Image 1 (cartoon, one colour):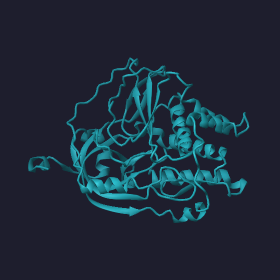
Image 2 (image 1 turned 120 degrees about the vertical axis):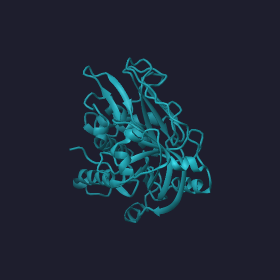
Image 3 (image 1 turned 90 degrees about the vertical axis):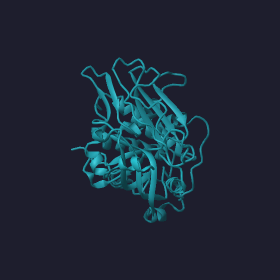
Image 4 (image 1 turned 60 degrees about the vertical axis):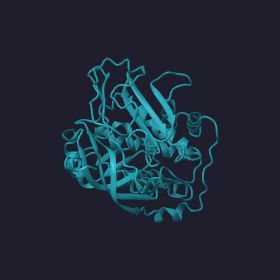
Length: 370
């Protein structure tokens, strides 16, 4: 970094950025914090910022080909056929210094935690580091409908456009790895065998999971609703599914995409097959399908204000999918056990609720809306 460029770098905290992301838009900053790569997150976090989402989404510049990142990711865009006006801001490009510190950083955040049973998107380490990069910021994140129920904006970054700020990484230094303590759950899951993929279409498998419940039950309806969100084979319903890493700035990084959608909103879904082994992909399909169905439901008018509720419902469906497949256990990043078939039947609903709530509060650092 040249002396003139270094002088332009602002020293800031995560909380300062989150308090007013739009005021940092396009600026190069230096910020220190803890980075994690979970099931649907790749973020720099600080639980003490008192925001609905206490995280800054992290992205590598396009073409980096790094290994770390979310296991599942959904980018929202207005469809080409949407009549709303959407402009893309002009920002300077970012070139990543892929030195040995970056390689260490990327390697640590892509090291999976190995355990019995299924630990969905679990990594072994979080990393505290000093990051320099460009901040992209918006005042409001998420999708917005007008009074007629039409989607008129899709701003924000990261999974479901939930994040008001994104840091596009330029350099990383002062790396310190912290091994996540999974000891409490490992003693429970150690005898649970890994779940092999049944093969075939993972969306079809998600549909099949609904058949394990009574057809008129709420569980069957919830699981089927998630699978149905992808539409029928060959149907052009605005949902695009891809497989690979989703750790870079999207190629189509604008509020409006180049495809059309029946309701004017696009869902660009990516699943990382390196981190979703065996039946984990089916669980991820159910999770993301719940997001698609919920965002398209008129009762959700602002994604950011309902981030906690959206994630809670998606994890609830994920657990039901695991139950339908007769999974013994299901663990989330950070060691939150959200399903254990050994739990007494009378306590299962309570234990599932406690597991999901603990994960959202402690690992995802989401704040429940008042």
